[in-house]
Structures are given as structure tokens and as C-alpha cells.
Image 1 (tube, rainbow, N blue to C red):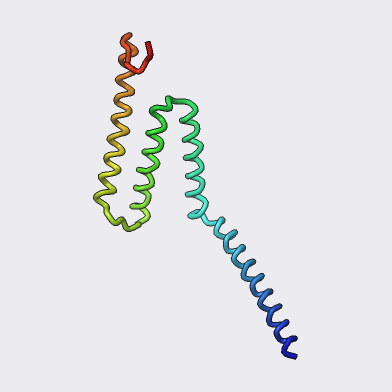
Image 2 (image 1 turned 45 degrees about the vertical axis):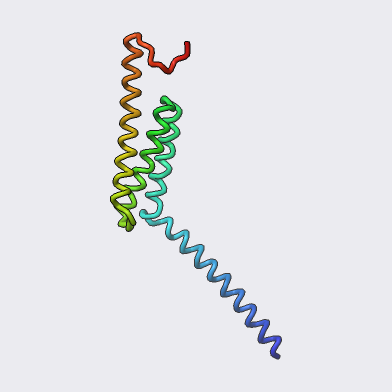
Length: 128
């Protein structure tokens, strides 16, 4: 008799585990219907498409640092907007400012190089 009870208990446990798995799967699927779930994913995917489009159509020495830097800056801004607690907010703000300064320097030096090329001057990056 005890073995029959054990078998029934095991079957009930298996069924309840199967039901729990089904419930968890349904919860996961129902979360996809929420805008708060798929909208950030969609924005992320659009950002990836834009990233590859920029890489394909522009100067890599300028576009790669800019894209990577802005990804870090937007991640930091998003953390603040979502209300995440920063351990060192001053350091984070300083980091963002330094990254943006570096991007500005890259853009300025690239623009200066283009001006020099327009005037028939060598930019110094060309081989003889």
C-alpha cells in the first residue's frame, strides 16, 4: 500500500511540476504583450541597425569611437532615469563628461583634417 501511495505522490508531484512549468511559460508569453517589455527591446534593435548602418557608410576611425562612447553615455543616462542607485554619481558624471569631451576632440580633429585636405595640405596621416 505504501508503494502505491508513493507512486501516486510522485505522479502528483510530476503533474504539479508540469503545471508550474506551463504557468511560468504562460507568464513569460503574457509579458511580451506589455509595452514596457517589448518597447525597450525594439529601441535596442533599432539602435543596433543604426549602428551597423553608420559603420557601413562612414569613416571608421571616427564612427566607431563615437558609437561606442554614446552607447556608454546612453547606458549611464538610462540608469539614472530608471532610478538605479549609483555608488559614485560624481565619478559617473565625470566619466560621461570625459567621454563626451573625447568624442568632441575626435570630431574636431577630423573636421580640421578635412579642412586641411580641402586646402591642398597634407594631414600627416598619409604615406609618402
